[in-house]
Length: 433
Image 1 (cartoon, one colour):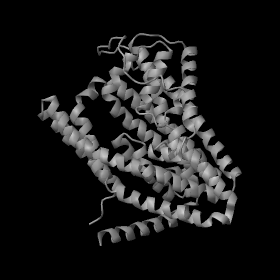
Image 2 (cartoon, rainbow, N blue to C red):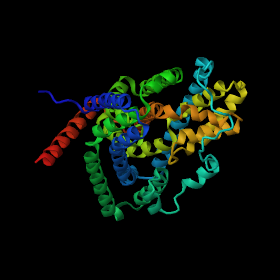
Image 3 (tube, one colour):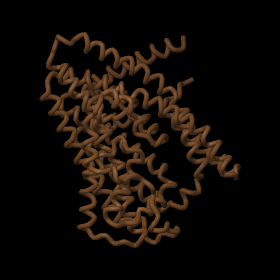
Image 4 (cartoon, rainbow, N blue to C red):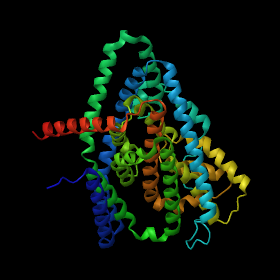
């Protein structure tokens, strides 16, 4: 009997979770009971996400330090950094611009048949702390131990860059330390393999909990807004894939196949972070050298959140349209440029997209209460945003690898994938025995 692929298992768990959640929502009428039952399911997905958080910091540190040390010198690191940053800024601008254009074309907030929240209400989001100044202050870690303890990925990246460059400059004098950190990275990848075995359960639990509380009926209430936003996301996916095709050629299809499991995990759990280990594994199979992917991916999680970027402009204009506030083209362009800067502080901020949007609404005198309309469906929207972020960062890593000569040929990648499969089969045999 042919073994079911991991991607198929995750997809089946997602559909099963939707079915179970819908059944619970329709059969249990007491809100307290449904909340209690939902909490038990969400506990499983929270355990998975907590396990991911447990491994992310040491995984990023060990793989990034080893990758930078193997690059050889600071100039190589700087070159890859600026190429990555150039791609991220371009992708961010395109994402924001697409959200702006499509919100104007589709007009999701016009003729809304839903009651609008009182414009004087607040969404109670801490927008005062979300400034470019605070982001710059937050960039440099006060303590590496503190950054590791709080899972501050961007701070870990900054420290790891210094650490890796210093190791590269010392050469053979630190070979034993480099070997130790390399061994640590392999241990973390082994632990990652164990954690990812729990992914299908987490996907089922996350979907069950979300649908049990909200029901599928809420999707009908916000059908126009959600449908328009997912149309915008589909277009953004097309743009990203086309950009990948320009630089990678037909191989971009192979890349998408290799990250499909990571795509589904990020979609079902509404977390880009949850897909990080699977994306690294998918990039390995595609032929991206780990010294490139371990550098570009963490940066991408801080600077290249394409789906979240699009949502910022799209949701802001949706709220302004709902309240009948007409924004001139000049105002909209100004808003987009401000978002281009402030959105770079998204990393490490809970419910970051909503916080950015709330701050933008305040700056342009649009009622912050408009966020209360979309809070109920934000999880469903976050699924699409997170999956888009996964696609965008994967393509960025592959393109930068191609620019840097760090991408294996298709034939070499196939041989490398076979080695990975053989190692995985050996590990599974060891676990089972």
